[in-house]
Image 1 (spheres, helix red, strand yellow):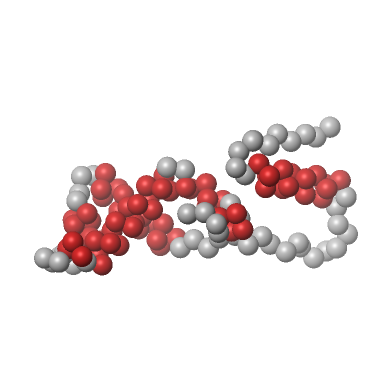
Image 2 (spheres, one colour):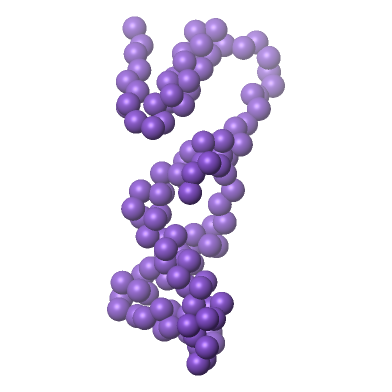
Length: 119
């Protein structure tokens, strides 16, 4: 006998539905030779993911956001640093990297349908 354990968290319903779909497919496989339609997985920019982790590594090595911008963008931040696009870009990279390592990496494995309403 085959059984499933579904962890009772916010994704329990999706996991239960996936387990039931698997169970039905295993019990009565389709006769068609065509593969099933793929799920709509989210698109992730590998370059941005790499930049996020690079920025975080630089910050954890003791560099300031200004130094991170200088290294990653190849330009010296000017006097308008407080309102610059470079500062905003570095802040967003670091914020998103922190989210990613604080558990957000799991979102990389979830279908797009579930992630659309979440931030």
